[in-house]
Length: 228
Image 1 (cartoon, one colour):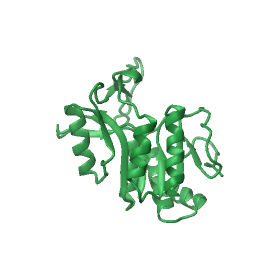
Image 2 (spheres, helix red, strand yellow; image 1 turned 90 degrees about the vertical axis):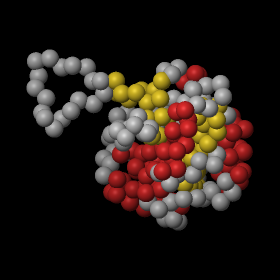
Image 3 (spheres, helix red, strand yellow; image 1 turned 60 degrees about the vertical axis):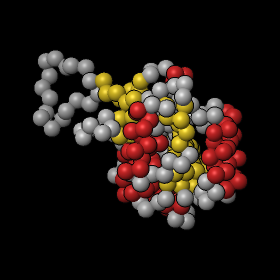
Image 4 (cartoon, helix red, strand yellow; image 1 turned 180 degrees about the vertical axis):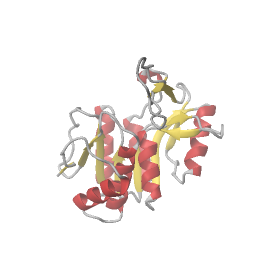
């Protein structure tokens, strides 16, 4: 089993029924598409948007037994800010300007957050975990809970860090993947495919090479995944 730790958000859809978005969801969906059994450890608000996220995860085949509800904070909502208009320049018909994706509430402190106790309880409950993916930065105590939970399950640990960020203190056998500063969605597919490869027992370097090839991702640098 693959456990992805991160906070999902509500995203609108053309059908009007709503969907789930965010890097943790992208990773979980990619791992599920590669045949992995996936659980998402996260937290949403106790609201209609949170209900829609739960339903969307179910449609995607992503387990959400450890998805918690926060009665005090709303489920984040993904928003797309239109790209600034460019005057005096023609735009090719097949090159629609892409806006920047943001989250509301804009203040992270106003959104649900994962605490060390949430993670410890979830990872103890998900006893068949083979791979743990930490998809976003957490407070030091919560990261320690991720490390402890992965060690308890004897699971491979994969940690995603933002571009240019210093990785937290991790065990030497953990794998660190640096997210690109700009991403078209392919990075999440790489991480998900990589996790699925590890879950299948593939050696780390081979699993990463296979994931990059299968996902069509082109790294912005020559960096290899940092692994012990």
